[in-house]
Image (cartoon, rainbow, N blue to C red; front, side, top):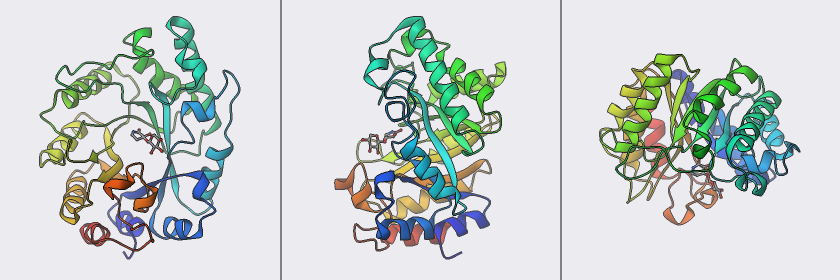
Length: 299
Ligand code: XIL
């Protein structure tokens, strides 16, 4: 293939990008988006603060804009994200206990129902594990509602949209030897053993000098896949955008049958949440970087 999406499709995978609704009127941006990608993740527009800014008042305008842009051009959509400790609206930040649990489950139900049939996969729960050596859950208002909040969110999402693939998504879970990776692995193994409806695990894969790509990444992907879930690389960016590292990431995904897609977290370096790291595949002027050529060649 001559584009990322077409080449990935030849391998039975997708190649996606995060998209910001505010950039859909930038023709340099949409030219690359429409040419190269066949999967889209709204960068912020489906988060809790965007979709339920006031309790019980749902707002889908900018998320719908992205979904319509993508689907009308034959691209698929990953939903991101239904339950998360971060980017909560103020009303939710101030809640706790059973009221918060109920509000979280209602949010999952309402948003998954709105987008039913339009998203192929949901990041149902994002970033629920702690960094460091504990391997434990992250403390948060959601975690304090009870350790079963994650499976409750997955069951609610499954009831609202039975056909979407339901994923757990996190960062710093790339290195197989890290306690956080093992903590997530043990949760997924437990969910599969008990029939909790989980279909996939997303690896954000924000690689930088503090959390670099390591060669056991392929072991991580294949170990999770062996639990009976798909694995997806959901928010890839690499500080400095080493062509060799991008190539390794693509090769690792292609080596794992159940690694069914890669999403980069933005199009041009200027679109990145970490723009100063120049971590993406396109220069700010829209030209292809060496990392782009390496990815296309590896696909
Ligand atoms: C980031 C967005 O890129 C920024 O625009 C926003 O200000 C903060 O969130 N993990 C995730 C993503 O799951 O939602 C985050 O996206 C990056 C880290």
